[in-house]
Length: 146
Image (cartoon, rainbow, N blue to C red):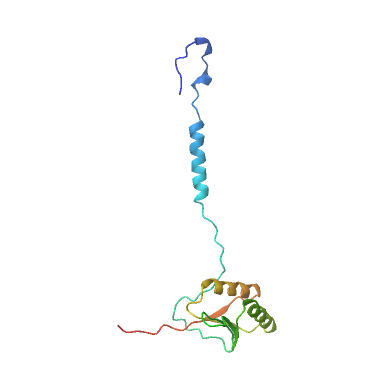
């Protein structure tokens, strides 16, 4: 609080008229913390080129290396017509196949209910091996009449 009427004229100075800046500093720090907490965080993601429409007319490559992700049964991964129960064995064989045939296109065939995490792990592995584009084979929805 500013005291304008000092009890003694000898102690009066202009320094006594200066406002207290402590509340102003508190408000500045609160605003600073608010701005830091609401700043946009950078999300990490894998770059993917998705088709612009569900009715894409592009055909699958002639002889793609088919990688399968299955949701049920003992075999949860597949390369061509060979199934795998263990992920490390699947990844080892996939890397060996990709390195043996680097120009062969890759097509991913996945069950609808496969967790997204398994698909992202596969995309990360393909990207690490230099495969930039992989075709995704989907079964089109059947048209139902009501």
